[in-house]
Amino acid sequence: MEKMKALVILTSLVLLSFSKPADKIDLFNGKDLKGWDTWVDRKLNNDPDKIFSVVTTDGQPAIKISGVKFGGISTVEEYSNYHLKLEFKWGGPRYAPKLNDKRDSGLLYHGVGDHGADGGFWLRSQEFQIQEEDCGDYWGCAGGSADVPAVKSDDRFVYSPSGEMMSFGEKQKNGRFVSANRVVEKPMGEWNTAELYCYGDSSVHIMNGVVIMRLFKSRQPDGQGEKPLKKGKIQFQSEGSEIYYRKIELRKIDKMPAFGQ
Image 1 (tube, rainbow, N blue to C red):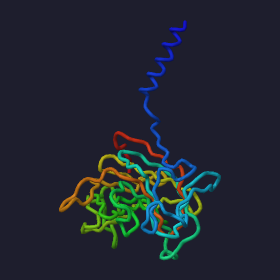
Image 2 (tube, rainbow, N blue to C red):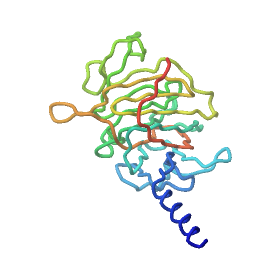
Image 3 (tube, one colour):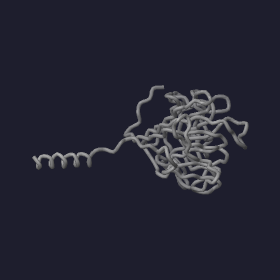
Image 4 (spheres, rainbow, N blue to C red):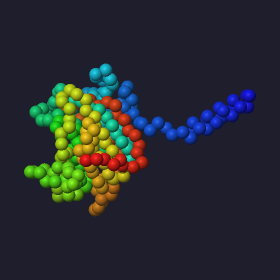
């Protein structure tokens, strides 16, 4: 009997040792900013003004970004091939130089290189825009480039699944900005859900369950040419507006899902 108990225990331990870890990674632990670096006033992890902090709002923990100063908060670790899901909502205050502009922040991904590479504030990366009425837009930051199917509308390019595949980036003739093809943001004060799928050199921006941007051939400068940009840190921007982020969850994926348009 004792031998049987020992065998059962040993078998259980072996099975546990081969079991897969939980596929969900909580990037925000709900208590503090462990696992994150802050960048403010061109200084790493020196934030006396608490531009980035952990608060409780609507009964749940969230990362508060005051927006008083431009800067960023980024994961210490780099990630690739994942599904990122989070919730955000706007606070009230806005600050110079964007006192009268749309409320603005941003979800940067595949962040690499030096802090402050873009304007002294943000990493080289690809941007999932978080801005009032413009959530899901694409910006290439500090050399991040990608191909996007788009159409020209007035003075801007707009994502279109059936559009011509065009290159966008800091050094590209079309510029580094592509507008999402619809506005699906919820009213001020409500929580929005943003989702980002990254696999290989492709990515998909989703707002409140709606696909509004697809990127292909993500890349960055490399001497006289370019190289793939498929892995990096995740960073949130402080850009003149108060905003809250919560439920920041990442799951690894082994392929890009098929999305309807």
